[in-house]
Length: 95
Image 1 (cartoon, rainbow, N blue to C red):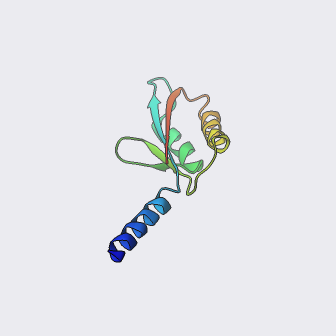
Image 2: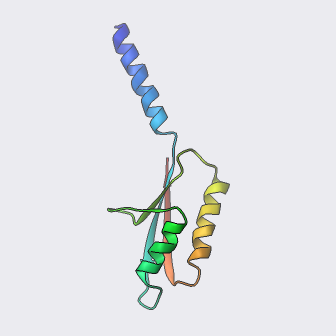
Image 3: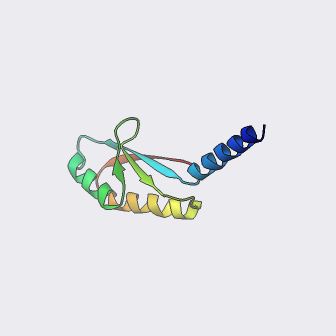
């Protein structure tokens, strides 16, 4: 019985360690009269985002839990970098 409780405790401990991080996903919607996709790609890479394959276009891995002010700084930096590029952005942060 002790081993069962120990295994359960270690599993919970491992899961809580894994969950002590955040990721912000960014979806980019291009307009036909806007900037080229390759230019948008380079700008986002330069901001520290990584391209993804699947549901979202880019991800920013915080590697820790951050407060809303820090998250807003990232979002505003992305908005500023793409201000004249005629794109629509969607952000989703998960913990």
